[in-house]
Image (cartoon, rainbow, N blue to C red; front, side, top):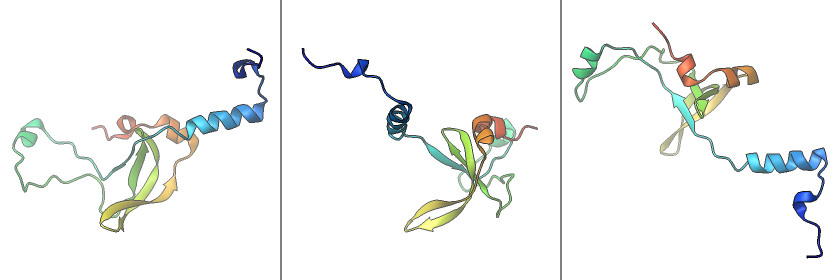
Length: 110
């Protein structure tokens, strides 16, 4: 073989960053929106029937938490997008908050 292997070719920092970004951009994440939560007794859970209503702890006009792979990304509000729901992002959490908070950590504890 007469050519030099690409694996042995040195890359400068800019090339490495471009290659890393290219790989990262192909990774899928799951976005989810939390409408609210409720803590109920198992007895009450077992008594739920179709048509029953469980009151959530969040206010009707409160911003909704947006998660990317269970890490808090920010907050937003529900919008109609054609015949589907959408989320308008109204706040992006700072990087420290995104790394520190997961859905389990931000769930209310009583």
